[in-house]
Image 1: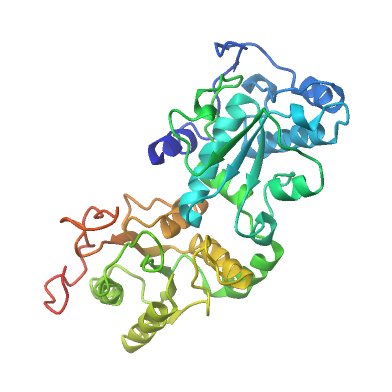
Image 2 (image 1 turned 180 degrees about the vertical axis):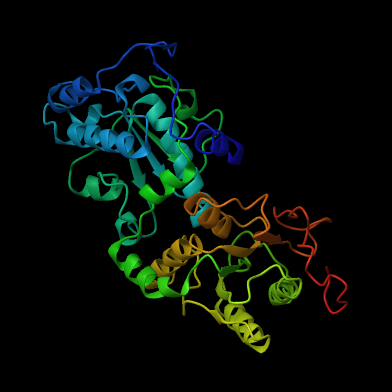
Length: 378
């Protein structure tokens, strides 16, 4: 699914689409669709009206115009009292993993949805979508809309939990639109725009974040079903950061933004960095997993971390964890693969038989890490 997402959202043909749509049999044509007519029909028709577009109508020339017209269409369907809610043709996405993984799965689900011309809703649990996010600017909160009787359980509603697979109903449904290849950052910034509560946290820390900030993202996974690091691995992050500084790869006036899914790891890392004369800071009491949070405040702090990470200009990230990589790569729009500003640290046993699905980064450790230090297993 990562390859699929890259294909749909990170195409070199950013903000463009093929010229045409697909007919009822899924055959793509150069038919010119009048989107204004589609919106008018959505507002008055007694039958469900699929979302249709072509590049000729200019709405797909940029993300803002495209998502605006899609939002108007979905809102028009919801407000059209002539259509029975049981006739809605829609996709309901449900998150099943951490924030980074679920964000990527949601983006892929949405692209399949617009290809099929369907409505799109989000069944986000265990907390409400609006508690952390303000996007996308039109009604998508499935549970809230059910409670308000604006939608109902219908036979034409396709439910998708997590990543789409090749044999899922949504993957096999006929297309009515061509694929759109917007840059991932346009989608992520729009859909995952912070709620007012999250934005308040982001604003309070934004003065400390800049292109000279190093993101230290230590995701252990120790309290989750999937671990990413062994017990001694977090101690390598400060050592590698010092090696990076000593090698001359960092500006002299950097500061360090420390994040982790464990408060004890975060506190220990901050203490070691200060001993090394780094200017380091972190959000207090933010460590949680968004699928099993201890409270909404921690969730909102975690989402705030996600947005703050996207603004950092350097990073040491945990290999195989998508939290930091998605924040910096998809939300922040930065290249985490080929430049010399972002590096990954792997678990010590990633290159031999081990429990779990984590893998080694390539290279396993950045070249500035002191792998000759015998105090640690590298």
